[in-house]
Every structure is written in C-alpha cells, then in structure tokens.
Length: 119
Ligand SMILES: Cc1cc2nc3c(=O)[nH]c(=O)nc-3n(C[C@H](O)[C@H](O)[C@H](O)COP(=O)(O)O)c2cc1C
Image (cartoon, rainbow, N blue to C red; front, top):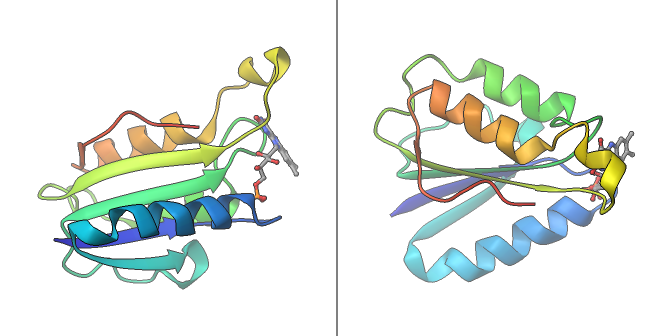
C-alpha cells in the first residue's frame, strides 16, 4: 500500500506526531512524509493522511492551499484520514478544530474516510 502523509507544523508538535504516525503505519506499506509546502503532486497513492496544527479553529494556510489544489474527484480511489494538534480547554472548542475540516475537504474531493478525524 502506498501511503502519503502530508503535514504542516509551526512549532514542531504536529511534525513530531506525523513522524510517530508514519512509524506506526510503516508495516502497512510504503510511507512518504512531506511538508504541505513540498507536496506538489499526489502521484499514485492508496492512502492520504493530512495533519495540521489548529489555528483559529482551522488548518494552517499551507494545508488549506494544499487541499485547495487537489482537483475534484482526484481522491475517488483513495482512502483518507486527518489529524490535528490543538489546545485543551473549553473555549477553543467553540472555534472547532482543523482535523474535521481537513476530513471534509478530502471527502469533498472523493476521498474515502478510513478513520474519524482525531486531535
Ligand atoms: C496563531 C495560533 C492560533 C491557534 N489557534 C488555536 C485554536 O483555534 N484552537 C486550538 O485548539 N489551538 C490553537 N492553537 C494551538 C496550536 O494548535 C497548538 O499549539 C499546536 O500543537 C501547534 O502545532 P505546531 O507545533 O505543529 O505548530 C493556536 C496556536 C497559534 C500559534
């Protein structure tokens, strides 16, 4: 299985998590880990995982740009999953989190959600 994990990270938390996830799923196939700014072409992949810090309740601009560049229906034959890092606390919940928005965007491009969005 070909797996691409695309992430962004400003302070390093999401990058650390991306590496842990990539290590954990390594036995399932060939895993490539890319920063969103370096992820130009999706290529032929079976699973796309996207992770972002939550900023103002949503993914970072680099992740949003990456998602917006994925053509309509490009993920029709691709499993997708999303994760974020976030603050704990009641008030941040009011703004929502990045993972759900990433997952919705991936599904809107035809992706098949293989796991619930996680923070
Ligand atoms: C400008 C900014 C806005 C943030 N907005 C939110 C937010 O809306 N909700 C939340 O849960 N965390 C928010 N955070 C906290 C980050 O999501 C959290 O610290 C994250 O782990 C940072 O990831 P990184 O180290 O990969 O950059 C914000 C952090 C910054 C710097």
